[in-house]
Length: 250
Image (cartoon, rainbow, N blue to C red; front, side, top):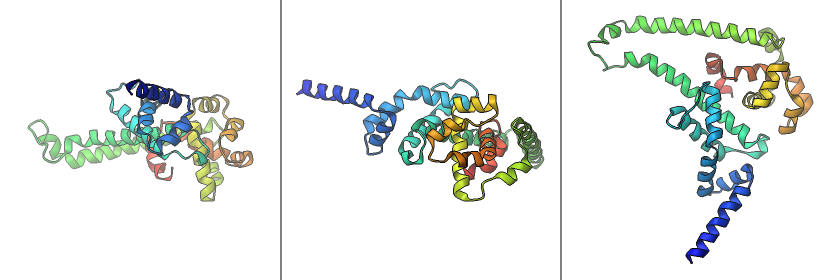
C-alpha cells in the first residue's frame, strides 16, 4: 500500500510539473492546494525579481517587500482570468507592482508620522510634539515640492517621446472601455522587460508584439498609442506621487 501511495504521489508531482502555468492556475482555482504550494515555491525567484525591479534593490526572503509580493502573487493566481488576454506572469507582475507601490507609499507616510504618534511622548520627543502642527505643515510643503519636481520630471520624460500634457488631454480615450483597455496594455508594457526596454530605446510601442498578446486590434492600439505610452511611463515605478492620483482608476 505504501509503495502504491508513493508511486501515485510521485506520478502526480511529475504530471503537475509538465502542466503549463496557465493549466496549473486552472487547477489551483478549483481547490488544488498542493499545486498552489508547489507553484508558490517554484516561482519565488520570479516574485523576488518582480519586487526587486520595483524597489531598485535586491530583495531577501526576510524583507517585508518579499512577503507582500508573495501574497500578491498568490492573489494573482486566484484572480487570474485567461479571457482577459494577458499571461499569468504579466498579470502577476501588475498585481505585485501595485501592492509594492502601495506599501512603499504607506510605509513612507508611517515613518513621517511616527514621531507624532499620540502617547509616544518622551523627554527626547516632547519638543517635537510641541511643534506637531508646524512639522506637519513643513512635511506638506516638502510633499508639494517633491510632487512638482516629479511632474516636471515626468513632463521631461514624455518630451523624449514627442508628447506633451496638452496632447495627452486631447488624445485620452473618451469611452470607459477603451480607456480600460489602453491602461491594461500600458500595465503590460510597463511590467514586460523586453517591451519596456524597446519602448525606452526606440521611443515607440512594440505594437506587433502587443497585438499578439491582447484581444485588441492593431488599429485601436495605434489610435491610443500616445495615451498608452504616457501611462506605461507613469507606471514604470519612478513617479509615486502621480501614481497615487491615478491608482484608483487602474
